[in-house]
Length: 101
Image 1 (cartoon, one colour):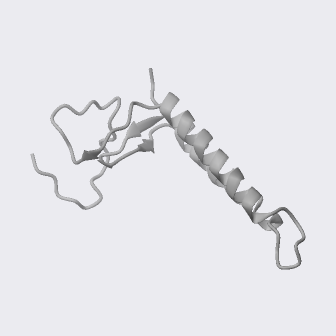
Image 2 (image 1 turned 180 degrees about the vertical axis):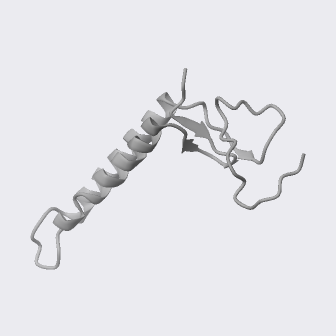
């Protein structure tokens, strides 16, 4: 199985690893920012801001569920380990952090 997301090397969560993962992240960003111009301003026209916050919450939850389905089980990590699986763990650049072996 090809994972769309891989576990992050530092912290908790995932990093997009394939074009499908990056596309899903881009779709989340677009779907979250698309309704911004329609949020109510001072005169009360447009939808309520609380409705928008609920919408963002739902979109993020759906994104997390997709990442759970299309990625390995996340867990807390801090750096490279001997047992890293290149199919599950992001082994990209270290972001300028020196690694201990």
